[in-house]
Image 1 (cartoon, rainbow, N blue to C red):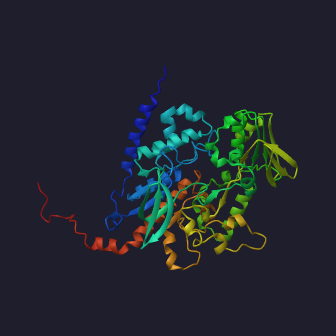
Image 2 (spheres, one colour; image 1 turned 180 degrees about the horizontal axis):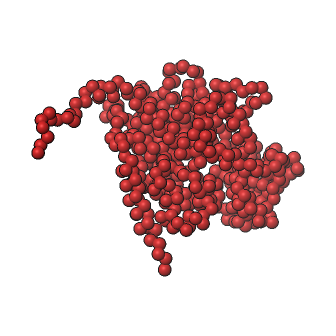
Length: 483
């Protein structure tokens, strides 16, 4: 019989430790932001869009700074936030297990503390990487133990300025509309939060919707239906390989993975980026150096992990075709025919792992802002020969992830600075931070402190009046002390 306490008892003990740890570092302990209302409606200090790892971590970081008038909104039902139990098809995270996540440096809140409480210290020692299901369970626990203020089934439909505030519109799955006012907004909407998942037009226009899926739509695909089918996969990234492996494991007759490049990416720049200098201070570099760092990082791309490649390679019916872009696709009878430089290829089903397009106009919540937000191509001209169309399409952000007006000094659009872009599209400006576990420790701290600074400075006169009115007596007697 095991001497380990039950997972329930161990987690209860851990949760008590979390509460004690937070009480030990709870200084200063009182809320300090100015209450704001509009008529009968209270105004949020911060509205966070997205209750995945980035949104939850930001809410916790703000609470540590005693900014408690915060609400987190997510379009998914509880437990379905982010990719981990929806469309992700990897077996484990790609991040090394020792990387800390939303914990904010509190040891009892780390993934390791949770994992050991649930499975035991020996299980952690034997673990290679955390499974995606366990990562979601950890995030669910993190949200619960901290009682973070999340509202699910709220899809952000738009943001507009409203007399010095931001008005946010929402809809739910029943089509009901609602709105709220906030002083600050954080967009923590994940890897595609700066645009949308991309399917080449030649596929969208020529192939029936039931005959292909983007890897981001894998939750809507019953992979068992691919048994005995010829499957074509487009893409060289980890998600393309993840979905190829899932199709093979479901019994696909063949899976051909096609890569535009002449070779599969081998070097993972993310592992290089995981150092305190880069993670903590990339955002302070001059633009030219940022551009050159990101050109190298984006051009290297991220390879599939070795275990993911082997997951595919163990199947005889798996093949990789490099230097094999898809020029066009068409239906010939019931067959999907793909034209490539290596000749026509014939499939029954397509899986598209072509990533995402960065364009704020493609997202309903930011479409109205898209023409006003500064992009890298608006603020930076690279040297001749160093142009990069993809980087130029990313938002050019301020030091705390805030959007900037396309026209510098345009005070009519200064409200954009109150919208903080904590998505993957922040990367050229801020480095590895938004939508990344590896950069979360540094990015969340910078984001939360910027928001706190902005709120305090904006209300400087109010805080000064509070000081001038302050009359709490601490020295209450000039007599001799009592015996």
